[in-house]
Length: 114
Length: 113
Image 1 (cartoon, rainbow over the protein chains, first blue to last red):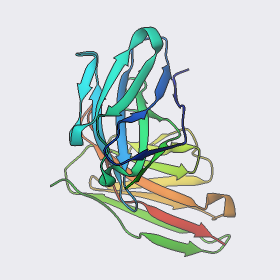
Image 2 (image 1 turned 180 degrees about the horizontal axis):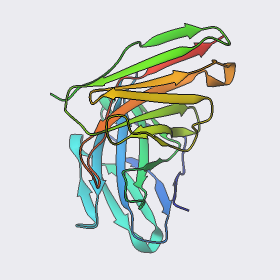
Image 3 (image 1 turned 30 degrees about the vertical axis):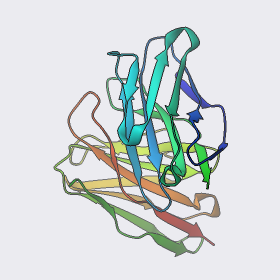
């Protein structure tokens, strides 16, 4: 069965320092993977997606993620955190069922301090 | 600009009540989804629909039903609300087959007392 594990429930950084949000997946094949962000009282927004093209994927707001098959990882990074990055982030995999069924990780809450 | 709207941001209902959560999208999307979001569990799929009057069970359909009479509207129904259905409910929509981005509504926080 396909699954997604987000290794940290909370990550705290200072403004201007790098961000690393970790995600590992379990799948018998190379999946399509995504990162979504949820700001307080708002719906989820797609940050970036990996669909078996380039392994380094660039998203919105300066975020990027690298697909590493050997490590079954898809970690999200940003060189310099901004206060507006404080939100909850979800790593998501697309199930190969012939339909668009997404499998969500449990989420990582990013806290950014001044 | 794409838009998915949900009828209520906050809702308080009593145990045993029948509850309707409404979702409307203005993007002419074929697919619509209902998720439940709980702390530490992420989002879990309740039901989805890939066409008018079509519905498929997700991972946690028990205690819920859905209705899709029009393409733009997808309703989630709690036939007899229970306290363990207190949660955040998110609706999403997407177009076509294969993968395309799912667009999410702002969510409805339902409390059942």
